[in-house]
Picture 1: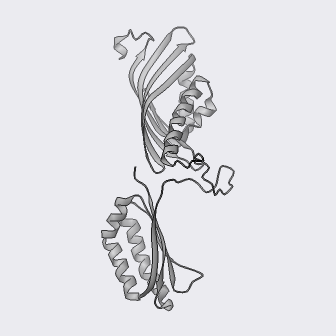
Picture 2: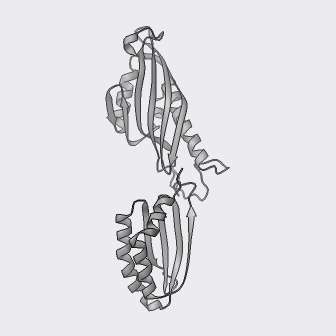
Picture 3: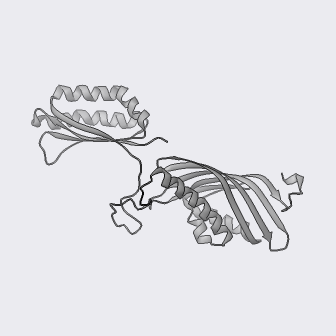
Length: 263
């Protein structure tokens, strides 16, 4: 799994009076770097308000590959040349590999220094994997328990659900269609297994085998054998939700699987 990289540091100019000139030169290259280089999430050279002649550096890169490409790019070489012409007294820059990302503020808008969306072990990717598997489990339990509110909470704003020939976009449309689907069902139990989860920063993908048993209000039962293909997103409150789910049906018919036309 790729991890984001932060570069943070300082540059001290030999002549403090030339800082504005240096920043003006840097501004053009900052914009070119952001616009032209894939994987550049932030690229900022700014004046330190407390130390004359000092420039603060902050960069955020999608992964090691994008940072390596930057170091070979003309923008990076031009920045080094421009600052070198101004003249440097010293520099202190370090890179940091990011193993976990979450909001500063929790759901009550309280700033948090602790990493509140993970366990005490600070497991990073392992906790993200566990959280996504719990998301899928909550989805299944909410169906069985007829808990529409909890079921809806598994979906992100603007999510997409592809199910039985329909594509629903947005939580309101998704909930309305879900209620229509289960309106003629006395009970339904969905089981998801063999989950394969891949996480990349605040996004993820998953594949699940699904078996669903149900009993109709009018009598009789049915079975659904299918696969889910998922996209996940970590939301502003730090929780993982479905950005997209697509149901791929293998069989949908009588519970004893005796209808060959349904397979």
